[in-house]
Length: 215
Image (cartoon, rainbow, N blue to C red; front, side, top):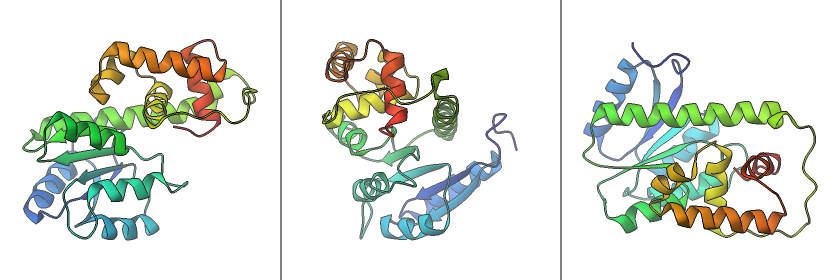
């Protein structure tokens, strides 16, 4: 086993209706030191999540009974698991497909076929981001107590997605790459959220996201 330090023994949920791909990916990830749970489609994966809480979900988009989009929406609606990092694997590689996947709630979108090494790199990066979020939550950014903010603040779905990535410590350039938009667009969303909340910088914005569980 040769997974990165600190990431060994992490549990991944692999959801895909292609048994050959599941077998190959599961074998490769287990060789890297991960524990891998599997499900053939979204409904089966939701049943798995009733009994197990993995550290990350790797999910196909096009599946029978319940596709990846509907599955991830269900995950994001459940308080106890909505924080889980999600990586979409899909044969659909157009820009609009990537944007839809990210807007649905995925953190990473990879197109099939893919290199196993890149998949592992994306998994490790997502898990490291998740660990940073947990550390920020534990430390509360070294400032006790929630920020006093006016009630009734409403964010657009894209602003919420940007906010979640800000809370994970990503720079505007990295957020732009993940959301397949320009860096200027991300800067505009951050500026709008600062205006809506009355906060003064990205650090306060990230802390607000963590305090109010928007990430």
